Length: 491
Image 1 (cartoon, rainbow, N blue to C red):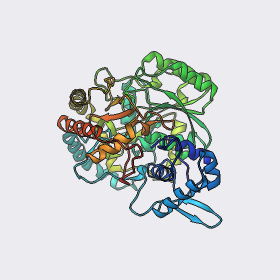
Image 2: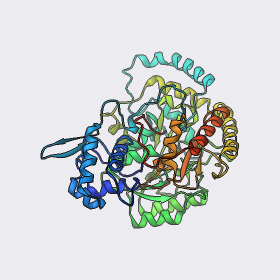
Image 3: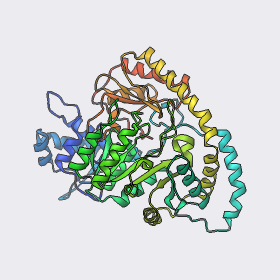
Image 4: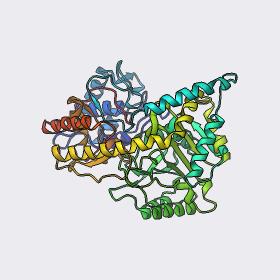
């Protein structure tokens, strides 16, 4: 459907204008929104996490007036939602969102079973098996000296904090272990950081498109996004500066290294311009470096914070992980920031999980030591898979366009027309799970002519996926597209 602000249970009531904005891309007949399309739109927004559970929907008369439709249409749509288990009503209290048994929102769904579906919604590689086995063997030998302790490490184990700090230092950003917090993946690192630095109602500058799980985190916290575009040509520092000065966001979130989903790499001169804008406005800058080492055609960039002028470094928080370079199954990430902020983040983390797995951190320590070995095997394979995907797309879907990225894990494809959401639904019926560009949009209804196509699978699997997507495109694309109820999510 469309992306937009998630409305949470704590807000309790969904305004008619909010819902109208979220439904802006819903199909209409003769310019009007029918009751089935309205019900399907609300249901899809629920399943995709755009509307939270247990919030009150707008009153029928109010929503009808906002949408410019009859009250009877809204009544029929609410009746259909109740009938299907997506809403419940209480006399005098209104109609509230609900989920029937067997349905889960996209942001808490699990992977589908191995049923022949090619999963392209996840842009992440599998584990480097030889190095992973070696790291586990080493970890087993080191575990004994940790076993006599309680095993709770809110900051992360000392050895891993030192290893991550040394990694930053080698890349050109002198870092002490006290400036590192080990987290359960970059997603927890981001959630902790935004939750500590931001408050409901604060503005945050974001790229459009951007990483969906980061956008979901912002909406859950209640941050208001100020989007700036990332095009095939990258960023416009002037637009970023204007947004920082005019909207005065408290925070900014950027993915400058092989941006997800576009694959763009921000040039050094643009980084310096952004840093100057951040310094002048006092904005907290959260930099996502999870893709930094997936450099296919150019060297990896130096840490963004290493370019910061004197006095600005404390405003920059860097988030990273092993999920894209090594293996997401370890759930191992980190935050690099000033030592005082790291202490505040660790304090905020304790009520959530009190610290990560000691065993996983020891395994991560071994994998970090083998990073050069892992990348020496992984990067050429990803490069070959990227080129194989491009060749297959050129054969089967010659009208599609994209700019080959210098790094990262996916192509950001221009379909030439706004069909991404119905195409994704049709592709699933042909055995391919892929996400349309709207899932990556910071604004509702944007990027409907785009598709993120990862190249993390073997060339023959990618070719088969392209064949299936081409077959789906040749079939009838249903703009209304009844949602299958199948679990869906993005990584």
